[in-house]
Length: 180
Ligand SMILES: [Cu+2]
Image (cartoon, rainbow, N blue to C red):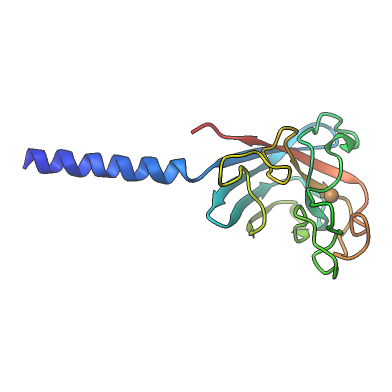
C-alpha cells in the first residue's frame, strides 16, 4: 500500500511538472501617465495562442483602444512613446476590421464602466510569448526588445491607420516572463 501511494504521488508530481513546463507565463504591471500602478495583466500561453487576464482599476470610463506594442519599455510614462508601434508582421495593416489587417498586436477595445475597474479574460490565437520550437522570433512577445500592453485615450475604430484613431497613450505595462 505504501508503495502504491508513493507511485501515485510521483505520477502527480510528474504530470503537474510537465503541464507547467508547457505553459509559459508572463505578467505586466500596468502604469498610468503619473507612473502609478493601476493593476496587472497576466498571460498564459496555450497550444494555439495566449490567454490574457486583465485586472485594472482607476481607468477613465468609456471605450479605449487596447493593443500590444512592440517594445517592452514604459519608462517614459508621460507619453509612453518608447513602446513604439504595434506588434506586427511587415505586410499587416492595423485593424481587426481592416481587409488588410489585423496586426498581431491588435486587440478589441477595453470598455471601462463608471467605477473605472475592468476585469476580463481575452484570447489571441496568433500571439506567442515564446515560439513553440524555442527560437526567439520577431513576433513573439518575449523577444529581445520585449513588448508592452498599451491603453489609449479614445476608442479604436479597428480600420483607420495606424492606430484606429485611438489617440494618446494613457496606460502601459511591460510584459515580463514569470520564472517557473
Ligand atoms: Cu496602441
